[in-house]
Amino acid sequence: MAKHLFLASTPFNVLTAAMVAFELPQGDMAELGLIDQTTTTAAFRDALLQWQNSPFTRISVLSEKASDKGKRQQRLAAFQQIQQRLSELQPDWIYTGNDRRIEFQFAMAHSTARGVYLDDGTYSYLGRKTHWLKDQVLDNMAKKLAYGWWWKQPPAIGASAWIDHSILAFPDSALPILQNKACKPLPNNLQRVEFAQLAQICLGDQPLSLNTLDGLLLLPHSSVMSDQQQALGQWLDNCGSDIAYKHHPRTSSELQSTEMATSHWQLPARAWAVPAAIPMEMLLPLLPQHCKISGDVSTALLTAKWLRPELDVSAAVRADTDASWQQLLTTLGIRLTISN
Image 1: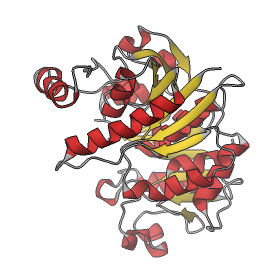
Image 2: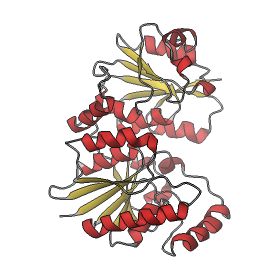
Image 3: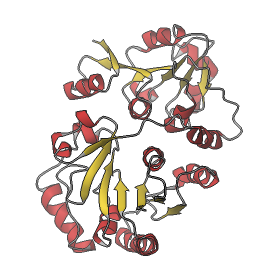
Image 4: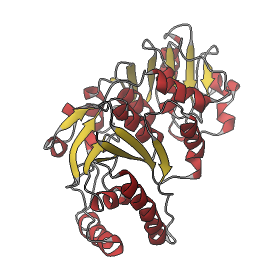
């Protein structure tokens, strides 16, 4: 019987951790450790604690987001929390969405567990730009001096010496450096009833019916309104009888009014609004297989394809969009509509 500790900082990380945990061999034990937490994730944390059919035997908050002032002391306090979980659980495997995270590296350095990189998105496929001096030398040395010589600067996210293998949504499209080690596919199981139950807890009393939705348009922040907004509105109108849109969570309330939906965003009057504050991750378990999703290139759009690869997802991109981004979207099966 193996013991697994999943470290997660975002709803996306939590869902991918649960997707893996549900498929562990019978008899294995999984715990979830929440790290780098903020007040904005409080509602989601509360929902997790109410999730009776969770695959985790225990859910703990191991660290809060460290502020610049007193960051080292806050992290040292978090290390004590992590050490306690390590002592009690004695995990065989520790999972992370980012092996640069200090909590993960501390846990690896103070246990006999093996590490697993769990897909965290674009870094797995496009990499993360680094500076040889700032990142590879100065930051590396600063962390060693502040926390311990156990710190290891990864050459790429997911490629540190701590990692035994990766679990990725699209293993064949991963960076070559990740493919130097084993890359296993992320289970395609977000349609399990347990995830729908979690999603309903997150929705609370909001009367949303998503199981008949034909089309969902993800709107960008108002500061980067799409050149193809009129075409996207027409796309939504052609999706079927039940259509909806979702605003960016930071779009102002004035621009989220029903009147602005037609006059500013050029959407069909019959389309209805999904509450902007609900994370996209929490909508996906409730969407039917025939639902189409579109919008500008965004994290929410990519999340839809990562977690529900069978869905029809398309993206509106400008002709000058970086070629590597266009290649990634195409590789992931996201259809592109390109404007000049």
